[in-house]
Image (cartoon, rainbow, N blue to C red):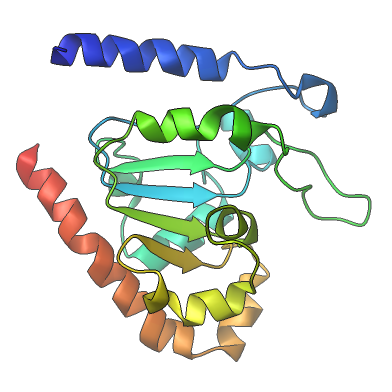
Length: 203
């Protein structure tokens, strides 16, 4: 298969994903699947589901949680959105709506079984998956506490790296858990750096 035919296959596949309406009846703002992938990405950020701002703009983590996540990673927006190096795929690709007592609803359960394996098959060079939040971690690692997973991140390296969801609530959590800044973040940055540099060199 030539590079050109590979690109066409990926483009055709992305059109299929973005045209998905499987959950339309349960989506308050309607379907808008949001993902950013390429065949050359080495890092996958597996997250929860888009928020309202991401739904409006069509750009993953284009909000305050994205600013926090980029700060954890130690990278700027240009690197974060360089799809040749970093893929962004939430467990649910459409905004799921709000819970009655506040906060976003969980990712729609139909989404990952329908699309996730096919999306991952399009990215053969992924070397590290960042599992951001409880839903991504549960889907890949099974039941468990996010804090325990984050603290014991070495148990699932080098294939995975668990992280909390970078919402505004995480600021208070970080202040209560100084080990996150002193132990986890340096290891996170050390894990992604060679993968980013390798992609830049090959590009």
